Length: 351
Ligand SMILES: Nc1ncnc2c1ncn2[C@@H]1O[C@H](COP(=O)(O)OP(=O)(O)OP(=O)(O)O)[C@@H](O)[C@H]1O
Ligand SMILES: [Mg+2]
Image (cartoon, rainbow, N blue to C red):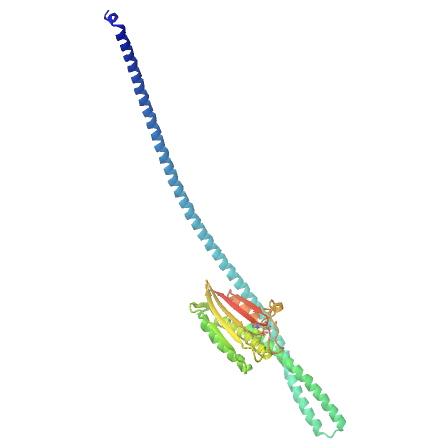
């Protein structure tokens, strides 16, 4: 009954209040829900970030491992390549040695066989020369008709002339045979640590002295440029010395020939340079002589190839030098300009 007493105004107020209350409670529920959602999203974002961070770390770790493994593999590859190179080098050295040994045996055998008959030719040739001298004396002492005696003497002179040529060329052949025997008997000595600058200087003196005993008027200027930082290098001293002497002799010969063509306005100069370049030791012998014509440049290492007058050379110098340098796993290189210069470079490896 009381309710019924409530005025319409009050009822409106109560209604509005109830609606407000309902609205506020909705709002509270909505806000609470929104906050929950936001909280959920935030947590998810943090989780995602954490996951990304972990993934990044793992990626970095994996990349690091890949890098380490790659480095390890390339180190192994380098080591294998080096081992392969060494193997190839020692294989070619072995083949070279084997070739030299069998070539040496063959050469020694042939040379030995030729030497024997050649000695007969030379000995009997010399006896013939003596006999012809005696014959001429006898003819002079005998009372022979004048025309006949002169005719006989002329015959003997012709014979003596021929005999002289036979002897000259037999002796040349003998020289070649002796050279072949000497080279084939040559045995490679032991490797020893050597100062290349000292070696070059020592063998230069030796070669110059040797050349001047045969060509007394020959003089030459020397220009040396020795690398002071050159470390000692493992080599067979006699072999490299022998090679240097061959190169020096060739240079002296060429400069001496040039002097003959330009006696007044030419000054022979021999330049010797040593240089340490990375893991290589280089020696260059350069002369300003006649130079090497391009058309023979690819023949100069062939055994018995020579352009020198018959009897003066065997043509074995560069061929042997080439083999000796190859046996050291080095290189012998030539460079030249005809009429200007010739330069030979020996390249040896530090091991
Ligand atoms: N420095 C040089 N200048 C010009 N020509 C050269 C020089 N060195 C070598 N040659 C040429 O190369 C050729 C071959 O040289 P190599 O030393 O093998 O034989 P060779 O000197 O003729 O004879 P050998 O050394 O046996 O007495 C020479 O005959 C010459 O034509
Ligand atoms: Mg020579």
